[in-house]
Length: 382
Ligand SMILES: Cc1cc2nc3c(=O)[nH]c(=O)nc-3n(C[C@H](O)[C@H](O)[C@H](O)COP(=O)(O)OP(=O)(O)OC[C@H]3O[C@@H](n4cnc5c(N)ncnc54)[C@H](O)[C@@H]3O)c2cc1C
Image (tube, rainbow, N blue to C red; front, side):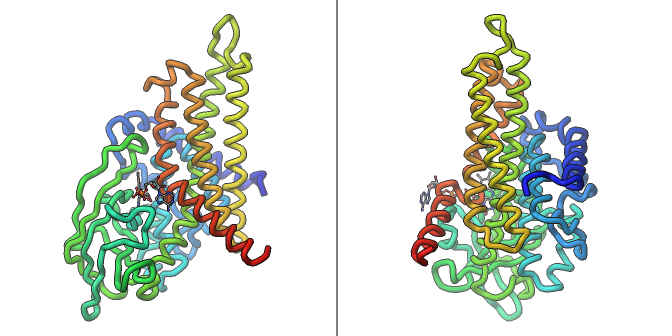
C-alpha cells in the first residue's frame, strides 16, 4: 500500500518535472505580490492534474485518491498555494461526482477536470466557521427558482472561480436546514468583497462573496432541500485527505531543503549536520513527515477501497498539518539566521504551513471528529 508502483512513480516524476519547469519560476514573486495566475491553473489542467479521481467519462483521469495524493504532494513541494488550488477545484468535482444529477455532472465536471472552469466551495461565513451548521445565508424558494441572500467569508478562488458549490439555508435552524447549490461565478447579484491579505498561501486568493437576490434555477439544487450539510461534510472528509497530502509535500520540501543546507553549512570546521543537535532535529523532521505520509495514504487507500475513512481522514489531516507546521518551523531553525530571510524558501514554507492547521476544519475540530468516532466505537462495545 505504501510503496508507489511504477505507474504512480511515473506520475510523481511527471508532476515534479512540470512543477519545476512551470510553477517554480514564479513562486517567490507571486508570494510577494499575492498573485494568482490563471494560466498556471490552465496549464495544470492541460497536464490532467485537475481531475485525477474524476471518472474518465467526465474528462478526469479516473484514478484513485492514492494517485491524487501523489500529484498533490509533488505540487506542494514546489507551491502549496497551487496544491490548494487543485484541492479546492477538486471539491465541486467530489460533490458533483457523488451527488450530482446527470445534467449537473455533464455540465460542470468536464470543465472542472480540464481547467476550462475553476471551482470553489462556499460554506464559511463571518459568524459561522467551525460551527458551519449555523450558517445564515438564505435560499428562498420562489416558483422554479431559489433566491439567495447573504455573505460568505474566506472563499478560496472568490472572484476568479467560474462556479462555486454554495451552502445556504432553505429550512429551520441547524444543519438539517442547509441545502447545497451550484452557483455560477457570473450570476447576477453575486459580488465580491475584500480580498484577504494573508500571512501565507499568498498565491491562493481568499475573498468574501456577497449575495444580493441571486436567482438560481431550481435544477441548481444538489439532491434535495436539507441535504446540504451532508454534501459539505462529505466534501470535507475527502478534502481532508487532499490537505493532508499537501501538508506532506510541504513538509518534505522543508526537510529536503534543510537537510541539503545542513550538509553544506560548516561551523566549528564541521558540516552542521554532524552536530547531534542538528542531526536529531532532522531525524525528528523525517519521522514526522514519514508518519504523516503513511496516515494520508492509509486514508486515501481506505477511500479507494470504498471503506469508511472519515476518522482516518481527520487523523491524517491533523497529523500531516501539525507535522508540516513543526517541520517547517524546524527547517527555519536549521538554517539559523538565513532561514529567517526571504533568500531561502523555508520562511515561506513556515507561513504556508500555518493555515493548513485552520482550513477544512481546524485541528481542534479534527480532534472533535476523532473523539466522536471513538465515543461511537466504544459505545457500540467495540
Ligand atoms: C486561507 C483560508 C482559506 C479558506 N478557504 C475556504 C473556502 O474556500 N471555503 C470555505 O467555506 N471556507 C474557507 N475557509 C474558512 C475556514 O474553513 C475557517 O476559517 C475554519 O473553518 C475556522 O473557522 P473560523 O475561522 O471562523 O474560526 P472559529 O470557528 O471562530 O474558531 C476559532 C478558534 O476556536 C476553535 N474552536 C471553535 N470551535 C471549537 C470547538 N467546538 N472545540 C474546540 N475548539 C473550537 C477553533 O479551532 C479555533 O482555534 C478558509 C480560511 C482561510 C484562512
